[in-house]
Image 1 (cartoon, one colour):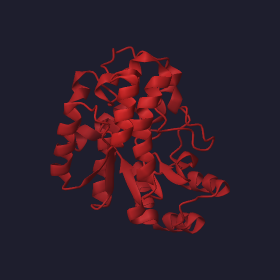
Image 2 (cartoon, one colour):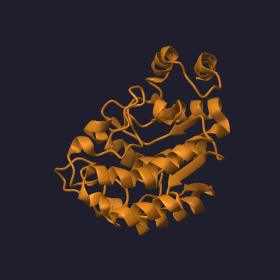
Image 3 (cartoon, helix red, strand yellow):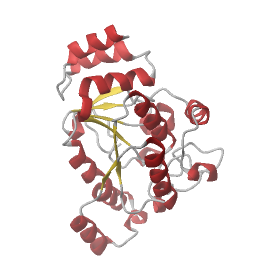
Image 4 (cartoon, one colour):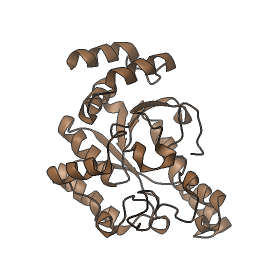
Length: 260
């Protein structure tokens, strides 16, 4: 495995931009590797210039557990929108204490929040897709954009089977929406069962909202429990059509389509 990591590093070096023609080679070399191997590669390649983005759902705590075992100094950051559930804050503290790590917290711009609320009301997201996306932009996208200016790569817990908007997720992508940083999705091909098997087998702390029927964790007013027959993203912005259920954080990087 060390030889494979070495070959990949020679292919892309330690630069924040992977050429499109080299991305195919990297994907082929890592296609059958485990999530742990992919995390090891990204840490070895980018060091302190890579961080894990966490909203503290099931996938994210799996990534944190894996990452800290590989690299105890792994960087973890979260976007605190100001509308998160109390269960999410409780889990953040539990994760901090369990692993002895710092969680880097990104907050929205105070002026932007004031203008958003004064111009549109507190619950503008229920009024339509455009209003909801405006709220997401101020509370999530802009803080993420600022954070990624510090990084050459970021790690996410996206999985293909989560929704139709994520079916084409690759394990490694070039995120042209955020300055050509590398975006890594080590769990892209994992099933929901595999996620929960890992959590139970490794005794990983998880968000107690999952026990109450919340497979996906987001802002409190925009997330609800789902029925057994619904997909795992059905509880996010449940009043919208399935193909609209992304906030813009995870656009198709290669197509630069931030509306996914």
